[in-house]
Image (cartoon, rainbow, N blue to C red; front, side):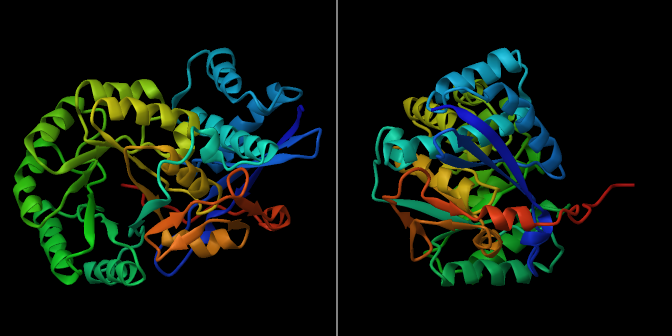
Length: 377
């Protein structure tokens, strides 16, 4: 079996526009072979970079024509060492991961097995997910409370919120978080993402308040590059410090582990890929850390890849789920996983990723740029 073509499809941001939030562009990847078998994947897309990621994938594609799609490790090695000369970075890693995910899907179909079996087998019967409540529109905080309460009402037992986002002061963020905690069922866990908006001193000041509110997850309190501050915060609080969504290779996560700069690592599934995320999880387990699968992507190929990783990772903290992308994803992709009361997915028995993609729908999307983000000045 040989690769004959690699195609990319841009799902424009407007497809996932909603009353709650502006949409996000997705890049899907299809690997085709001379035996009429194919695999689907997805690459992480930083804001406004859908054409750049697609171009990187196509640059790689011409080197893969005629190669064996079952040799995934060989592909990753050659892409990083021969093609990129070890100069990868975030965007190139996203391109590699998009192709790699499609290769895993294809491998599963060839072997008539779900991908988690190829990763070593499942270590759980259901994969837990948590609801991301982010919006890139400006609303009064009571709207975020309503949204979070709705996510819990439909079955989610953990919700992620952003109390310090968009220039919100620390005092106001804590006030809003207190309001949210008092408004939610106490059985619903609140996960806090600071989105790297704080510094060491301000984070230190809020830790006691967060502990008093029962918060057990604090994501990206400071920039990920500030390893020293992350390490000091991790040692200073019983709250789990979560970091790593912007990192793109094993070596960067190894630095976090070496300095004990997080309790939970959260690599994005379509930024690092399935091979790397299982490797990162093994290293994290040896350091008594957990892994949460970050997934700011479609609820199609990317979510499916995240669920397969989650099924095979022993030290899993959860897989991220964006309800606001579900309706848009359903227009071009069907997920053959059974959702259990919204808070988890039962393992699929379908081969590959367990998805069906409507290529004709992808071809029909007319591209236009997404809504402009705020530009200072």
